[in-house]
Image 1 (cartoon, rainbow, N blue to C red):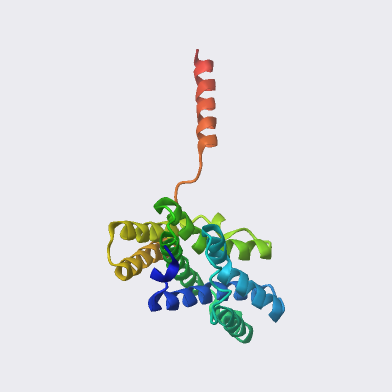
Image 2 (cartoon, helix red, strand yellow):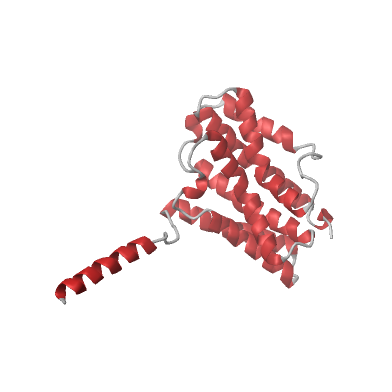
Length: 224
């Protein structure tokens, strides 16, 4: 199988938009850190193409942005926008919602492309998650700040939902475009709810349970 079944005009547009959104978040981070334009453009490129690059290397595909005329100019364009606009324009939740749209849309694209290369369904879901999340991870690592993955609200889960629905639709033989749109919207709605209401999965608490058990044992021993 090959990626020709995935690269429809719709996904071409979504791919560039996803790159642009992630690249913009990287450029804005560099702007907030008072970096040069060259550093800003580098952050934009790493953030925009990081997830897709790792996915393509893992599934044995040609790295998507190397031969694409529009990807590098898109990263440069959003860098220019970030350079010439005040960062206060982008404060608040606007960029987080935009990042959520890029995250879930990219997760769908990554999962669909992996399936087109004959990758098993569960692994394709993981490739979707990698596509959506790795760019943000690289951005945070390069900037030397805590990764976005360490935030309490749902992030990877939203990407996983979108990738899973896309793969289920492919396995079931459902029409691709409606499935892709629905999968992306479902993940985005979950991410948006997480941003708005600080939704999070339960944190690991075994140590707390162990401490309670030890305290209970001590109380029992004392009573005995």
